[in-house]
Length: 306
Image (cartoon, rainbow, N blue to C red; front, side):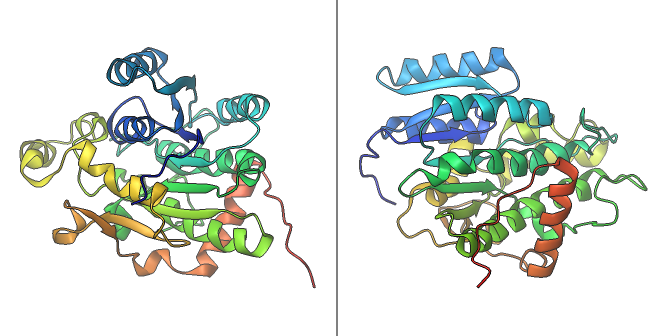
């Protein structure tokens, strides 16, 4: 991984008030990046900011409010960033929620995990694309999950209106994030956007997503919580694949990175396996079209028709 001075390049990290996002922000700030933390809980955001500044007094870092479950919040944040910034070098789409036991909807009427984990990031990336294109070597990192292996894109019922199941809905949202990374790279190449689009997953990392996400689901969930310290790694270790995807000179277009241990659960960061259900370009194109329809946000098409 390159550790060269980034010359005050700017990174935005969603869901950076704790867990993977916080650890990623801490490492970027320590290596000289200007970092914009985002989150939906402003109190936690200020606490994270204070904690990083305490460890890194010289860090160039700030916090801004962003709720990925609200398209209005996404648009407001993107508008502010477009006014404040001339360029954006790195966008890390990390924020997420996991397996609420009962089906919940965002303010826009999307199933909560689809809306927060995927559609909010789809919209945010589109709205920040002009700033990214102004950077000399812009990069977008989507945080997926090993759960994507169990996911299926329900193009006919993406919001789980017929029969909600918590974990399959979560797996769909994380599969969508990996597909998004792949399709974003294809469209960047076709439209000459100049982006490097990558994805990463943390394996199983001890973060607030695990401790507060699934809710009370009986004996199985209690056993999972008991076993977590034995099968997981720290949030700092879980952030390493994200940092590899964000910083490494060896990161490839559309590359996917994760832990190298047994079934990619934990271990040193390296190349991760992209499952078959994430590699279908037809599904990717249909998901992109559906996402534009659901969010009402149209990406530019700069491809040469000739």
